Image 1 (cartoon, rainbow, N blue to C red):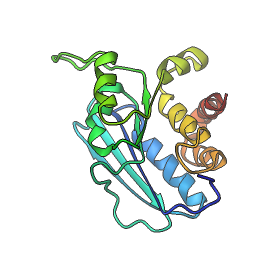
Image 2: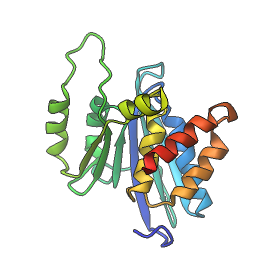
Image 3: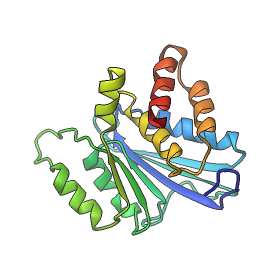
Image 4: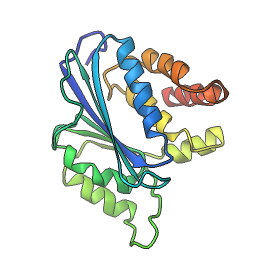
Length: 195
């Protein structure tokens, strides 16, 4: 989809855990969409709102959007910041849905955690369009911290055309949303996703 063509509607779900910066990602995408003069509706759903609880963000944008919530099976893209959390969002996916997933598992205390292989097998039952990206590892190795892995993933998604907005709009949005003291790190992350 060429970014200059106005899209009817794009449905995106981002999932992860508290502390992974999902609300910041939502703000950046929303800002980028507004730069492109598209309509947008967003919604955030929290499980346990403290660190480590499930967080799910819905983003709909296009010419005209009426409701923020994405119905089951209607997501164009599911972006997972953690593998087990991505499974929770699989009901929004269908066979055509693209899944961009951080190859990262945060152990959940007091339960049997799934392996990467188990998560992948379950995701493949719904969609074959799965890209596993070791975003946390890449950010830790190249930038010294994995706290920006969400920024890396949304930037990668834009560069790969998985989110139909211009990379320059995401870059402008990062400059507007991210506090000055973290801006350099976040712009480095954005540029890292380009390579």
